[in-house]
Length: 406
Image 1 (cartoon, rainbow, N blue to C red):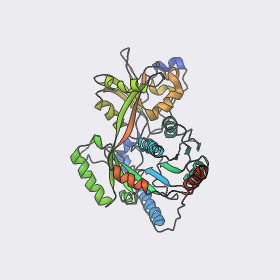
Image 2: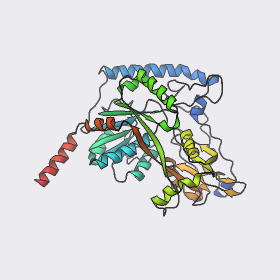
Image 3: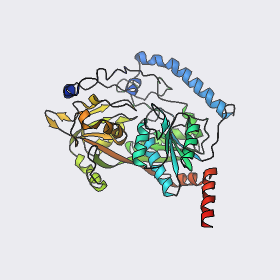
Image 4: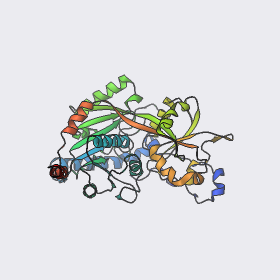
């Protein structure tokens, strides 16, 4: 989607490092904040959105009727997707599911879309960098051509594929589609900040963030509702009733992402036990935050639920590549330094710059680690995983093991 707002947020970043501390922090206005508002010039985007929706519907119909072909691979493919652009919590679920599959004796490969240059291990993708940190030596590929990506993963020894995003990539046949819906902003956009009509805008790209019709949820094998701890029980029940009308009979799983630890970004000699014990230290303290994720408001809500007072939250666009000046002035008020907290996804990019380029001390920036938790639907998910086909690669490996033990 072409940017709606000025992309020259960081003009003049080539200033010498000795002047960084005095730079004024860039004014960041995210695309979704502009799209969330009603009225004005943004409504002109409804014309291309109508075209986008028509083409999306036509394309879906062509795949439904078999006019556009899909390719089935020699390994099972699980897709963790959504119907809107932006963050719904896919990355934590991919990590959680991959670890679960490893625990069950599988060797999953992680396939992501990738941003920037594509290639094995997805070195240019922030999600893939995080997968490298959290999933160790599991094979990973970041590639726009998902079919070629699967083939590479098979060559790397993957027995099944976990695809991060790609519910709309129907050229690749999936054996299991798990579609995530963020209950705090189900169709991608937050509620407008002002105006009489406070209902969130529900529209196709580029006016809204929908990639396809909400009725596309009917293709899912299961709908995973994320961030369910951020809404009331009544609102959740009402939304589930809406989903039943949109996708009748499709199982719904409830989940949330829970903070599990706090650790310094540039100090590596802190144990996991020490990291977890740091969480209570946020209570009653004032911190700053920085993020470049799909739903920064949820990240801020998590910090506040831990008892922190968020002074400034510097929000950049999803997949933003950090520059040294992006943290200028953050974490310093009236000469007093305070913690700057970021996400694990952002941390892999900030770490590459280092504290000197960012103009901060080694202990200033901290990472809030989170983990995906399934609150309802464990039996449904287990049945779906048990129903996956073995795949030629898995059968071949099993036959080799039987021969070795025979």
